[in-house]
Image (cartoon, rainbow, N blue to C red; front, side, top):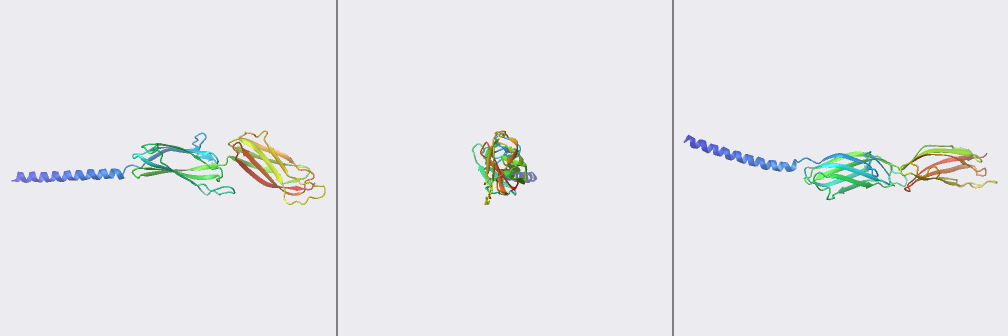
Length: 264
């Protein structure tokens, strides 16, 4: 009798143990779906597109190179890029730039893809610091993002500007500044003019325009250093002075100032 009872108890315990293992196995399978590791993003790089630079800057009017390695336990369902400005002032003739795009190319909808894209940068956006975010989502709903900061630069920069503030008519004034143009300088245009002057006896209206190319054409870095003659017959008063630098891609940047022409 005792032996039969022990056998019955053993069978009962065996059944309970089997059911426990079975339920634990089902629970583990369910947990495997929800607890799978999120995608891992490594070697995220971005920079000037023309040479696949890894330095975090690019130029207005050019393109941006982006690349990253993605390790994912689940098949990737989408890759998104978000680029927006951080406290950048929008100047005259410029527009705010916020870029968003989701990539679902077949080459990305796999396990462990390599992300590689080029994004065109508008030429009419403000220069400055931009925030960039890369987000990867897999088919299990797991998502990972990495971020960084991108400096967008003007393709032409004028610096170290120096010019006389007054000049006697019949003499000349001095001007100099440095030019950095990543695409090469095409030319430099100088425009000097006045508005609403009364032309006195013996005076002649003076509008000055000249284009400088020699010594500057196709140079990436150059110093503009000139002396500009003011005619003896120019009316005295305040003149508007505009310097415009054009690069080989047709981009332009301007620097404007004023100079007072005095009587001799």
